[in-house]
Length: 498
Image (cartoon, rainbow, N blue to C red; front, side, top):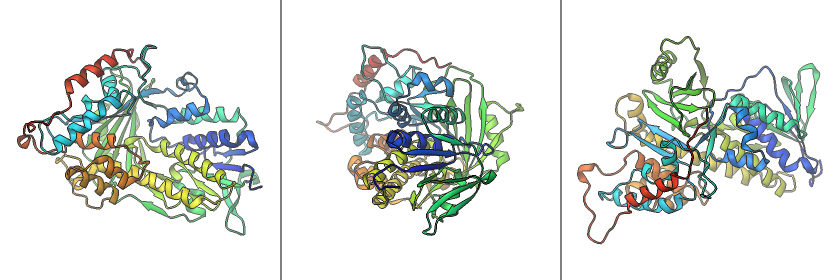
């Protein structure tokens, strides 16, 4: 391979991660002679734990030039304006909160929210619940579409819910139609070159598939990166207790909202994800705190499926990340690269971020490994930043009804970045400055998200200690904000995905 020409890249494994990576790298290099081959065993199923996304999935489709009407119907997809967290706090008035995807209108309301949070952190008796301050939460609660009329050119940011199996199939067809080679073969061994790089995949029927670069999308098995090249896996187990999930679909019982539900359970939490054809339900839990049988029974009771003969599906989760995502001539992506439980639906976000950043780094180095170390540091920082925010949901929980929640709240095995954010909140420091100090200039989560989490849990002085503001200090006008958001919401039609 010339140092100035795109590579022949071989992706091991399909699914959402494999085909997203193939589509993005074909988009970058296909027209300049780069070749993409995806080797996907028909015998290996797709785990498909998560069926939700961040707005980066919309950016992915926009980048490829795929219209919503082209893929959403094919993948049973619906819109997602954010996540409704329910039952994570016992604080009065904080039984639930909405974590929105911020949009342009929120530039006008967010400063009032953060201002009131700062006052309430110091004991001021002012309104500071996140649900009152963001357009996305108003739209989701009112069952409104994220697409406004032509006279309101301020669309909110949104993601999607989708069928993971169908998404992988759609992307496979799209990619193959544009020149990506699909080889439905089972890999039986991996051949290494004398210098330790991967030389070829050895497949059934004595097929040998060579490549310049290999992308490991083989799932938790991580056949190339971890198994063959010995890349170290860094567990997040001391920070995140959950290692199992039980999954069951249900039929729609009420008109859906454009949101994911994240509902606290006895030993974890369950998701509720409305697709056009069904509702996806899953209970993510810690096997140290509840058995599979107990978790299934608790999920069935929560979703009204106690007497149903529908089978439950169990999944194991390997929570953590590889030390280096790019090792020798191998890039790990998807579950081979790492997994942080699906609480904030970040799995595909990281896949997209990894593929685009890899393409940029690899090409900037003349299609060499010149920028590999810098790339690995950026990806590790992104993973760790997401981990810190997810851990915060558990460490800051305000439940006392089970050992699981009490142990999470007492967990002192915290990453330094999270310690920085917690210290800043409770010592009345500026959260934006703390976020930059902890997570750099491009953090995984914005100050808005951190404010929503802390305020949504009610992490303020107790109500009996709140006091009126001193003379000359004013709170942001919550009524004016509510009126403004309600007026904006009037420009959005009802949400009718089914």
